[in-house]
Image (cartoon, rainbow, N blue to C red; front, side):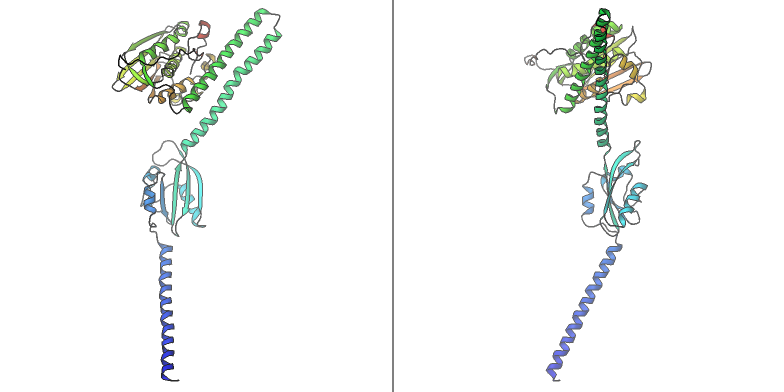
Length: 406
């Protein structure tokens, strides 16, 4: 073999050896990178920034159960970076996704973070690396509560409507069978009238509550005189108070103004007055007072009645909830009055507070944002007179004994 041929052969051998060496080095680096990736607990680039921008509690956990990164709200469930994930159910969910490398979602109840009531959460665990798992916790307690309220509302409404409808049907049959007895016919007719009134009161309140909850804003939004609201509420229930032997007294500051719908506020205050009358013993008094406290107007309705137990006070503003169910049904109550008060007050940017002691009475206080009185030259638009509705207006002497109650 000649010298040029040997040179070319040697060059080819050198190129092959060089290429093999390069490939071997590249392969070695790749194997090393894969090994480091398999054992690395470093959070991937960008994940920390994403966590910081999340509203839901979230964290990244390594295979030893150590939290290596968290979102700002993760502390609500006692999840902190550098600490071990404490909750047993969450640890179980994280372990479940380590094997298949996929993701799993589970609904859990968590009580961590010093919370007194368990929170219903939807927890989702996903693998984001050989050694890391991303855990996202979404609090769905409020959604569950709203769904339950919606279900209860439909169920309770159906039940409440069924009772007077069934009574009217039975009384109509009784009238038919007693057609030859005028006294019995008049007796049954009076009871039908009472049941029809109860049915009308219930449907009216359901409509009022639905309007307050469904509307995006109040139908009227103008200066409202609290003096006029209190006067109208007291006058609307004067007959009921006289029949029950309860005195209505009014006091406090005058000249307070708020912005909103006068009719809605009159109904709200009237509901409180009606409740106070029904739950007050004969010979007692119900006080309606107004207090101007800086930028807030307080309308307080106080009675000397049976009071409300602490366990009931937390639920008293729920739809159809009755602290004394037997008494409420006996007096023709719907269980919606206080719920209307709460939503009407919230629609006006305020809140309603309760103070009560069993055997000593109760005080409901509506707090509303105060505005300056309108100037004398600027008259408020006149409203068309509205017909009084049976659920919020004065009752006859006979009907007052069956006075409405929230």
